[in-house]
Length: 347
Image (cartoon, rainbow, N blue to C red; front, side):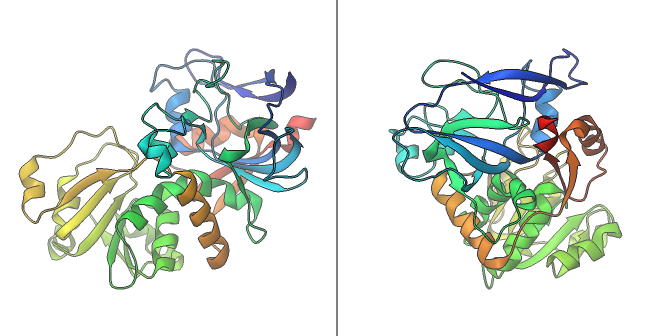
């Protein structure tokens, strides 16, 4: 077994994380071991640490970058010293229709998640990337393009691909009108990616405080959703609304902004209750969601980000300040993604 150090939620109340030493598996033939340098702090980490899914003893973290430090004997795609990115899933059945379509994130037999999952070989619980080393199948690791800063690129592996897939599914590009509701970790990357794809982008926000941020990220406008006149004027305006708001909120106003055959994709809080069907029927509107990304789409997203120089706007903290990051995230005090520097785990 391989020993490593990380941050684990041991308190049943979910309010603290404790530095622990734990074991990773010995490398299987198709495994690589990755020294984790940076890991993004996702809103889902916060929810799960606080018991949303009834879990305990979590080592969170599923958007990470690092360097290969060892390879299994059958590994052909990676070499020691290469830069690597790790996302939200680390295995799948590989045989169902979803896996064969390159959508391993929707595996009919459930993908193995980077943390809080169950290893498909030995049944052990998976422990995430708030740790100094991670072991995974090479198939589920990604080459990190040379042009991307490893700290700022880490959030691409969850927040980035989570908005990339619905943008591609909706064929966002020149001539399309995209609205992004919420300008947080997912939302700011949605604005960057949609703009780079060529779409006209509008940010939807409760007030105008983030207008300059929205414009600097590439949006053409910010619409204040508490202004009834602005909302009324936006009726039928958008082809796609990406809803990245993590808190409870009403979907009806967003649906009203969709044009004929428009799509509302709920990403920030997929546990929300759905609308009345008649709201969708007036204009053949579609309500959907999305769960991170498959391998093919993730490779495509990383290449696109490297070509266009897209990374997250991040605040980097030493991993010892993980609780500070989580508390500030809960309070909405971040623009736009916290990233943990795991190098202090060597101390």
